[in-house]
Length: 571
Image (cartoon, rainbow, N blue to C red; front, top):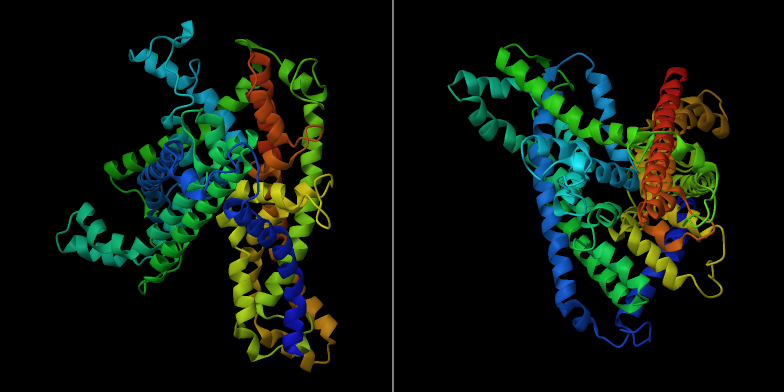
């Protein structure tokens, strides 16, 4: 009976994964290795595609830019992690929460912001002109870093510093500070004490953060497409461009090759993560203290000030440029969001694209939560009927263990691979979804389900069954025991998971660019269309839409956090 209960819970997520991920993935593999004639280069073999010098150059760029982005992110994130882990300062909790903003910001928002920041009339060009580099931005001949490797690296660091700070800083804040203090007493300087005492203890979290950042940068699409320019293409961008040129088979070969590379990177990261040691832990924040010396205060201010400029300037610039057209202050860009201009690339008013994105995100969230809750209950071994639980639930069955791993695969495959898989697989009966409104929400839900599962499973496994057993002994029915004990805890986690799923769908760009219809674009596609067109008004409307999208994303995330806090107070 217990096995049947687990199988019943696992059936929905297994079917969801099989139809929407495994079937498109198998179709991609068959397209890559099969003899089907798809496009002008369909006759080329897999070795021909992978041996193409242009493809090799793209693969090399993808790899080294991800490696350099990871190194720079670690170098800039470690000082910030130290400040949050070991020092106290006014507004620390607000600054800690603000670190979420770059991480949850949609890629098109960051792309639009860095195009403004690094353009010839941006503050970087002005600063460079002031010191005599790149001419004068006033004359339009200032330093222009758009569509360069510098722009790609800067945008990647902007996105991923929060991963390093929260991952490494979270562990650092729990390390016993007396170990480093003892090394200092014995004569070691601060650099040596960090190198020989703290760094080895932080090594597992550093390896984990580096692996996550590398994967994010390796599979980067939106950032590279918007700010990298035609000369700087990752595998993701190359896949998209080959589909645009109707070379579907070469795109499938590249998608499969990337999936293999990402899977290998995930296995290496998992192996590194298992090489951990027992850490001397204290309560989080117990080792933090105010800066005491002038040098410490200067270091803390320098780190926080640099971080505030780096993270805040692009977003502030984005907001101000949305109210400026051709160098003059005006709200024309905002006024035009409710109409489709003649001769423009938007077939619908931009605000209608925002409304469409919200509807798609709501539908994707509902699907992701239903599938994610069912999968989480199966993985955690927690049937809805409390009377069927027991000590057996702590053991993971082979089926649910495989389900747990399989649900993470869409993240490794990347959104571009998901979009391409939908494009080539779901185009004939009985799975012809090309004209279905649900095509886009299902693709977004596939990307969001792993986030839902990762939020819910730890909560379900942490619930003490003795509370439920006590309620049953005292005469409560199984339904009441579940309602009074499980539901409040699960409800908090579901609210948080739903918020993340909604934000993921709202900012999703890779799969959307493949699947969105021309007459029903999402806000991310609308921003990309504005940025691809010349003209000051188009750029201003792109920034205005980016501000709207960022505001919607932050409202969703902060509302989820607030609702979770209220539920915690009531329980």
